[in-house]
Image (cartoon, rainbow, N blue to C red; front, side):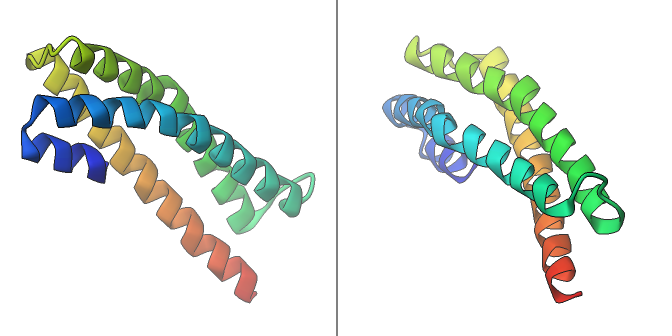
Length: 122
């Protein structure tokens, strides 16, 4: 999100193109890391998570669905449009959607982190 905002505020089309391509490459690391995080948390919680573990598990489902159904398609679309230097209303509309979905995931991950700390203290 930070890279996108800096690139957009900088306003140079080449910077936007490079940023959108880098985001696509970053997905190769980010998506498996999020999947491993969710899987390891589920393993640590046991077969039937309860309490904070259940809440974290449910949030991870939303984070994963948001990532795979919104963020990944947006990243591909924006990279293609940026490569074609098509910075129109549709580009910026999808960019806004990506930023909002990313902010939602970031908030949910923050809540999960907080609950993980609480669980570790208990």
